[in-house]
Length: 324
Image (tube, rainbow, N blue to C red):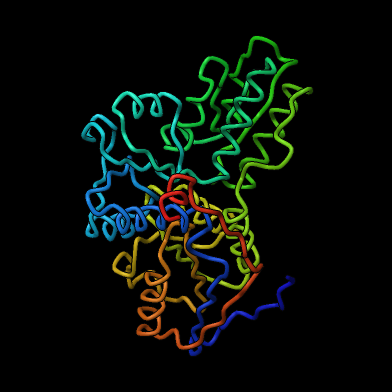
């Protein structure tokens, strides 16, 4: 949807909030949180969750208070207990560990992450080396690399591409982490195509719709704002990418867990502030931030809707059967 032109406020009197939409929870996050809540309702606590179900400390604390037990690895889960895999996905090794411990597994992996895993397996079976564009040590990347580690290569930057060697430069495919910056990923892909002219990617891009939509919204208002505040946790990849997009357009941009992270001095000399939220940030944190800004003189607000997100994912089969 094309945006009408924005005029900067220059008299310092009318301070305005541009609230971006879509923002906050994506379909994969909604599904993952619902999985934990439904499991707690069906089976009662404790329900064990490997890693953070989504990368947001407020969500994790809320679910912990309801009876979810968060663990780093499955050896912390009692034999035969019920365990949930996070939205970021897991490697086959983790699934084998769950089977060995006879755990009752509920898989909350985002379907868009599962898509990347299946693509990796398919490319490997066809004899290709797989170049995964992503961030080292991110939970999603660890899971994807674990599918076919013997033929997978991780790159984070264009420089990584320049240093890369593969067994057969002709038989190469690339995949991406779902929560990357569109612009940065495009530069890496272009360099891959220069180095490996025969390289191809998946039929449809791996960067998820929610990540793309939120980044495009930031770009759309970048010329109208003096400050960008992104609600999200520090370990949220897609939230950090929103900050980078804002900075790329010369906008002073900050990632905040909630309103308490905002430093009042950031608002000095600011007339127009953009507000958005990463895909795992709850809406109530956004509204609390809006209240904070109103208390500090930002009396006007305009919600900018770029696209109507109507994506929904069904629950995992394990829960669907149990509910029936």
